[in-house]
Length: 261
Image 1 (tube, one colour):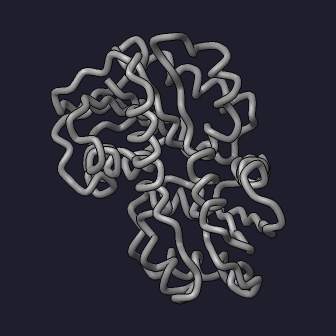
Image 2 (cartoon, rainbow, N blue to C red):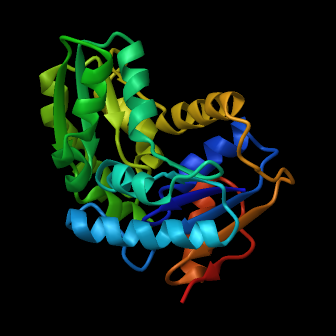
């Protein structure tokens, strides 16, 4: 079984991409909806919350856990890999595969938008510079986007205005690629592309992560991953709300959500 952990609904965009690339596997998803978003929390709190989520997913039978949340990947991944990784289980993040894709694209001016936790961590800068030299990187925190999206306001004019305001500075910097470094942001992908224009590539981060995992599994057969196409959904608060809005992120109906106590 493959586990996917996120601070809320956003990681369902990653799960949606995984289901397209690797539909045969069993998946268990945990959204920490009671404590979302993670972007404004300290590194210590993000580490604690993510540790609890990973523990729950391993207890439920996951052999690989994907930290879909960019903030968790940036702030907690390396520490938790030291704590949990063994020969038959592993924790993977989203920062490295996305950064590798940026480097492979030969981009010269890279703009990154995300939560305060992600953009201030420097995690993307570090990973991108591991794989390429000479590119310029600009980070922009967009703290209002996740709360607006979680409230179901992704299609409201107010959200579009906030997004346009955030991207104005980025657009004036003239990047050739925009990295939406938050799992919630694919909901606004088309609007981002419209604002940035055709000359700027807005990365499809979910597909990048899914293809990276597919490649990883092809090279690692030591994990006993069940293949029955089953899906299980867990959250830490308001399961009915999670079911309603989570279905929009997943782009298919979620029939049942279990609340963890």
